[in-house]
Image (tube, rainbow, N blue to C red; front, side):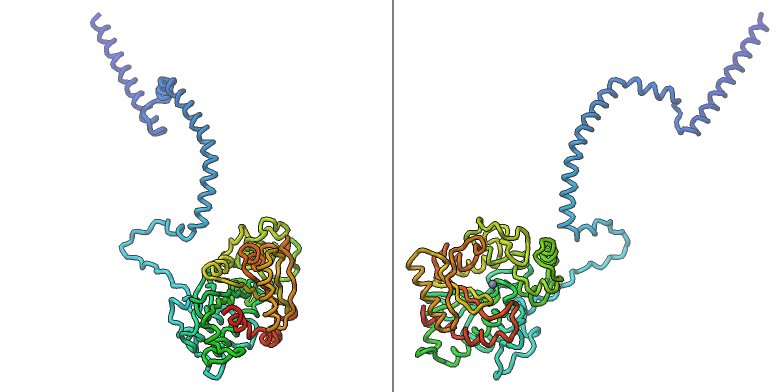
Length: 459
Ligand SMILES: [Zn+2]
């Protein structure tokens, strides 16, 4: 019995030993395979134990996945916003690369200063280093060698005129255009005088020969004023002692630059893009078949593709037959007086006791007046202005009818109808724009005494 008993103990001990070895072996093998000591069955069991909670979680996930769907929608918005943000913040995207932590200090990149505005911003730069030599005393400052009278040339000439005739006139800027040019205004005469007249030129780009005319008229005035010359029986200083004239020689400097020099004259990518768009759109609309170089030579609008003489707040809403998108002409803009050039003219008139507004355009050798107003006093004042200008220029007068769909938004229409200020439009020269310099001499002969005439009338 004892022997049997001992045999049984040995048997179970050996069996237990074998089982232990077997368990140890399979455990090690399992770990090697799965990296876990917990057998899959037990693992599944743990999943089952939390079934109820897991169920709740699933339904939570369903909610959150529902939320995710709406989240996707808002994600779309967000990614749109991100895109927009990328568009506006593109330059800042690059630095998101983590800076390498090397011991060496990277040289900080200082922004390269863009080419100084030099000739384009008289107030902030010493002009002399950019201008070159001033024309000699025997020569006029404003050259009539070419009708392509650029913005840069105008700014130079204003500076030189101020050097040659110090204290006789002043000039200021009325605003900055989309393509970062200044809208200059020149003041002649006495700013304290009760009667002021505003004259603006080149609202239409391709009529840039009129900027040359304006600058020659200004120089002519300065020359005569300095020399004490007379107009009629009065000296220039006497004529202008009680009268003030405001001249905007280049009301649309961006557009003039496009028409004179092409798309590469645009300083900003956005302006360049709009000018390019104008050509592509006008081509698609069948409004032009010309290559872009030729198309831009006859460009009329500003750098937003807005026809400024459709942008004044007169009949603006009713003008629906124009071009709804940026174009060389007939696009009225997004709102009345939306354009800085339009605002500059209106603000200058408002800032002064303005008794008349004159707009220079080309071509036709013609004076438009009337504009269909019914106020007899206003009509009489406008007729008087037109007849006097006719006497000096020799240009016939023509009655411009009340604004309608194709005349809405015009400068003279606006000041006549909305402000009750006598206004006329002078159409200078003969031929198609842009006019060649050969058209200039007759323009000059007709218009050189216009400033003196206005002083004689209103001074
Ligand atoms: Zn015009």
